[in-house]
Length: 514
Image (cartoon, rainbow, N blue to C red; front, side, top):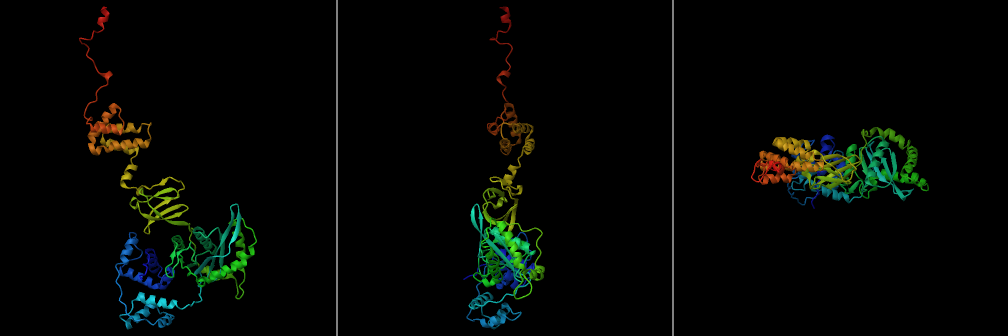
């Protein structure tokens, strides 16, 4: 069975943590929720290809994948089975890594298993042992997050809704934050995190959520698929997401205990209290939460609040100056008109992306469009349905040429053809009986006839059109097609001069003689 290839987005994160943050292989593996052997393999490929950090802006995901993953060769294996009990025992010793043990193994067994298979065999062996360890929690390191099992009914005109209770607990001090939300949707999930960070006055190093769909799209022991919006939120605050394993409550025992205490000491006490809005419920909860955090511990000195001030608070990362603005990520297909539709409004992208799929980040004020991890467009969000926001630099050359054909530019182009052409174009544009766009299209069509007939003939045709009051594209084209631009215009009947003397003309004297 082939191992699933690491995504390019995760490889970029591994490179950032290694080169910029200078973290160890195991620390990176924990942050990215993957085996440290995969991290080592990724970084070995990067070093082998001499790829520097930060990556150049012109390297997209396809180029990076082509550099790092050329065709693979299959390792030859034999039956030299490693001593897994020895490996397990040695790994407990300080400074001993599985890479070191594998190198020692290969020295004794040159034809033995390669590193990746060696690690995989050991993991399968270790999985048979159902053991768990007590987790030591460092100051400001982990924030455990979950929803309480109990809900609180809210009575309103639309009927009763069940408010969900968001719970987050810091690992070292057990300092807890709770709030009620209408649902466990993504926007409520992210917004609760933002308010929790504001409550703590800082950002923890690691977030340990449960595997709910708002946070984790697909759970996996080594590489859980984190919701993209949740991942971007974590990057904005400079924190990392390490979800708890599925059906492993001991991974987040801190918040499990807090949820139990919250349900027994807060939610149970208000079970018969009527609430009519989420805001009213949260005000009541925050009063009870203050008492909960200030309540003394039973077996040790202090309280959650005092431990927080002494231990966790000084170790938290500072909050950014501007709070995170929720943005929803969507994959949207670009139409042939190189525009995407968001809530009925159309936003342009560069014309070369027409027909492709793009990732769109939709926030309250901005629409950002990405293709293969590169931002290709950004627009101020508009609520006007049926209208479009088009940027000049996104237009194709032909469409840009058409869009920029304003009345002034059309007259300037007509001057280059000749004076008669300028006069004709000016007269057409002054005709108020037709819409301006119709007049401009007529002028554009007339000026394009220069490519087929030349400037001299077009100017002569415009001269003839002025004499006969023909101000349409079809008239000019007909003059040129029938070679009438070189012929003189006949005078009108009332302007034809008759001879003064003729045999059939009597003259005025005839009547005077009578």
